[in-house]
Image 1 (cartoon, one colour):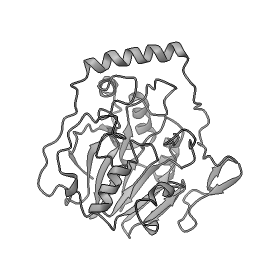
Image 2 (cartoon, rainbow, N blue to C red):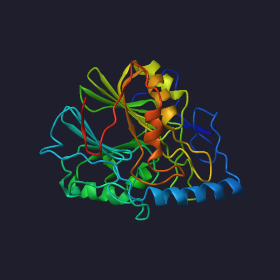
Image 3 (cartoon, rainbow, N blue to C red):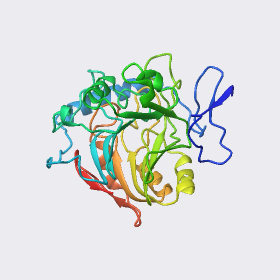
Length: 328
């Protein structure tokens, strides 16, 4: 490694952690080296592509259920609302947060298979926008420009080097980019921790791993809410539980696990359940499925698989509709 990097003004919560290691080529690395990206052979790619074409025809009318919107949906304190995919709204004791917001089709190409039940211009009074990593289904500049237009004073929290993407659309002083195991204190009650995820970032062909990816854990008084974002299954889930203790609510992805070109850096349904158990979570809310057809598995398969597995007795599996309000 050529260097270790973190935000100089925010505390590091893990003892002896020096910062995120960066290789000489400027790339960040994962802690868990057991996952190796492996390109599929041509025969497998052809087979998966053919299968995907067939399943797309069978599921072309598939769509997730959208919850009826009630009045003042954004004003109720201590709530979570799943927009879709990995996009969430949180009201944490009056602090309003958007997480990986994507309002539209991905890059104008991959169509969303869900209905947005509100005029996006009504999403106002947002205090913070959190971005987990730079993939286009998580960091969508069109969406962010719309948010900034309607919320000109909102602040951004993200991983190291992602500020390079955000500085073109918002003020530099509004962006905080953290390394893993760093904490930002919003107020006396609310703290936000940026933690590892085992994934990779990229927006083009030459910028793989040049911007840091991660997960977030919110501490609201005694409550702990964890968002895994994109990650494959790894040892970091148990480590997070060891650092923070019991997790009240864990949002973990269950879709996009069957990549056509290579093995996928996303948890499948069974791995997501294992991750929830490793986290010692009380409630598991599945996400990252059913909205965008971005993988080889049928779009309806992740939830069907999840429901076929046995859920541990001490874990509540909370399946929510799009725009359903969940109390914290």
